Figure 1 (cartoon, rainbow, N blue to C red):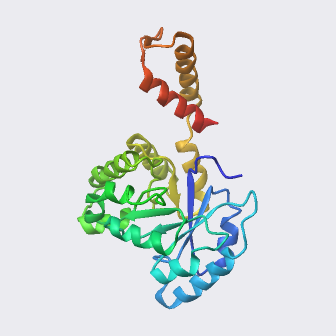
Figure 2: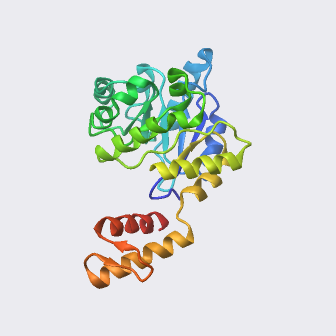
Figure 3: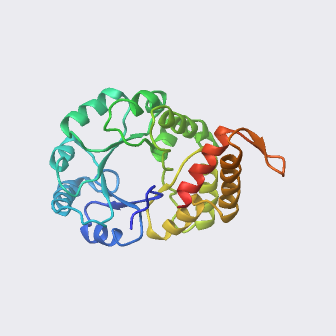
Length: 267
């Protein structure tokens, strides 16, 4: 069953419908059918038609939601209104006007703009707040890295934080991290998830099923975090105001709200 808060988002190429079907049984919270980077130019029409066929049937009650990363407006027109479509991921968004345009073409569809350039990062908040159909914000790190000429991973941290803050300021859920490209380096994935979590990300996109369990564990609260959150909430409910716990930790409304979010995620 899909988690209440999606933590794992699995990308699959749209021109391989058999892989899409397997992905829906992989344990991912959300499957993202990619019609953009993962599909060769001469396969894009087939990928679109295969995805339309897949999403023409309504999803079952417990089916994994399917989002689609579109390539062109033709993709949007073909997919909008299909009963099995849970949302659209919009690549290379730089301005709020682009979001408004897609929302008009696909009314009622949940939208997730992808910020993949310096200009997109500069307009992060206006994009996040552009339209009620925007349900999430995401960062495309590969394209952004190339645009900025960044060589070391830490060079993206300012942009990452900008996206996290913009999403929160617009009233959206915390964004999921961008993909970790080395599907064999699970230790590196774990460390990267831990860093992303420290920046405020929640969950992560994956490009291989073997990455899912690592992402899930990295973003779920640990038993110690759950225990600490329970202690904070219990103390706040007993006292009703700001207080200090026996170990010296100061508890106020913000700390209690954070603890409640931890327990909600754990649950």
